[in-house]
Figure 1 (cartoon, helix red, strand yellow):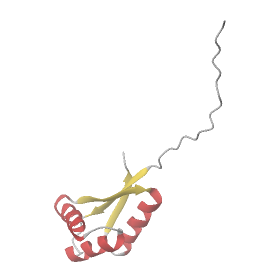
Figure 2 (figure 1 turned 30 degrees about the vertical axis):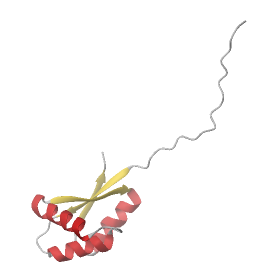
Figure 3 (figure 1 turned 90 degrees about the vertical axis):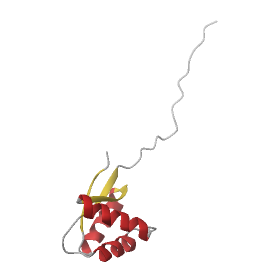
Figure 4 (figure 1 turned 60 degrees about the horizontal axis):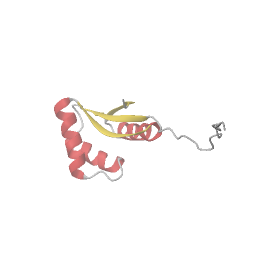
Length: 95
């Protein structure tokens, strides 16, 4: 008696995660620390003051800091919002 393997067509969908992007804050010489902290809190939903202070201080000391990692559309929104408030921000792919 022979055994046969039947290949069933797959009805399941394999979901791929959307590529992630990093929103970066760059240090500048003209915005006050208070303005940077307030702008971060107002721009990124759920960001606390201690988190915003940490991000601001990292940018101040190291020249740049990570604000958030998210999908491209959201990253563009955050970056543009930070820029519209006078902050220096860029996005890059998260590797």
